[in-house]
Amino acid sequence: MPTDPRSLRDYTHRPEDLFALSDEELLRLVHRDFKDELSRLKRAYSVGGSHGIKPSSKSPSVILYGKDFDEVNRTLVGLLTLKWVYNRDYDVLVANQAEALRLSRKSFEWMREFYAESIRNPAELYALITSIVVNDIGKDEELAAELASEDHERTGENITGPNHDMILFRAVKSGRVRCLDRLSQEDRDDIIRGMELGAEFNFGQLAQAENAPACLASLATMRGHARSFRLRFEEQLLDIAGAAGHLDWTCAKKLTQSNFDAYRTVYDAGMGIISEGLTLRAGYDLVLTRRLNLLREKGFRSLDLHVDDDRAFARLLCMGSVADLTTAELYSRAWTSLEDDVRRSLRRSLNVDGSVAEPAVQVTYIPALITQAVDAGGPGPLEAKEQALRSALRYLCKVMSAPGKPDGPVSVIERNVLATLKEVVQSPRFREDPTILEEAAIPESLAAMMETPGQQPG
Image 1 (cartoon, helix red, strand yellow):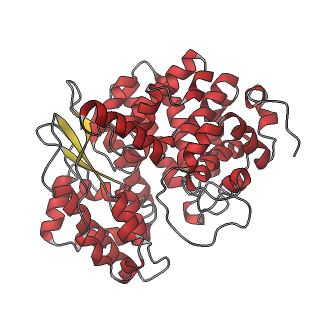
Image 2 (spheres, rainbow, N blue to C red; image 1 turned 30 degrees about the horizontal axis):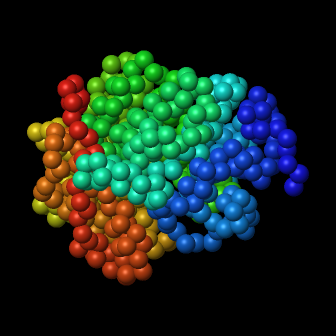
């Protein structure tokens, strides 16, 4: 294939030409500018998932490297989604989404108008593409090891922890992400400010009610920086679009209507806190309320967020990205059939906002664990899925109620269950006996949020 003399930067001045390129031409153009960053993604860890039949077409990473790398594929499917949005390729974007979950044309058109502001500004479009490419390089285990070694030499411990967004931010501050130096000072500052927000506040974690209201305190630091928050949101929406790109690179399989609604709600909650004085609890509950409204429209019963049991259950519905009546009723049966002490413990833990006096527990990767536990066997009887969900909830109870916390003014304790997801839920044994999950180890406790004055949820 002849080399195009125009650079990616040149093409951003003519987005109609940039997005008219074939997928392979676009990927190779981006690769020319981001070789180092994409190489880090080749070393990145992956959540993994289904081992079903993959598309027969070449994946983005096969096109570039001759073999599959999960995080390269996930990142570049996010980039391709921007192309599909610009070109109004709605049918491509939703191609393999289940009909009941499919992104609506109305939401697709909203995205096209929303991204138009960045696309028509060449410098901002280049900054957005940069943000897409570098978002997950914090998952590079070599980079994490470098920072951990530096931490240990300086303090005697690993202060960064396993948070890949924090690893990215630390890498940027240490000058390791050199592609950011190609941006204007304004664009660089806005992208880095969004990364700093991401180190403490994760869009996906709020969209799935995975974190606690105290985690929204970081949004207050974005007051006066609405453009930075908008760019961060644009990148995060494309991140969810590519979330299944390692399994299916022909469409944006995870950008379903329910996930779009959840992320747009996060944007609205964030802008409410940043620009309209919304309290942290009110911003958090907006996410729960919109999930409940969606399910009520499908025929599910009403829940009252002022009732602790209902609010705890609403969080579980968000964690499971529940968007249809059948699944909502399955979750309801599992919840109401739990042992009284387990349900009581979860009711309490899931309603803690997070403070030094009463830290909340954030169980990182619990949404992935729950959804994969329920669907571990693929199609199957609802009774088996319900049993698997009950085991997942018993494990969640065990993790959330475990004693111990890190030193310091910790308002949110993080316990990461990625290892349990990979070693237990994704194992063949789990399909035969989901109760093995209930005996899985409790992860170590890390500080997800340290409280400073003015951060208490309101």
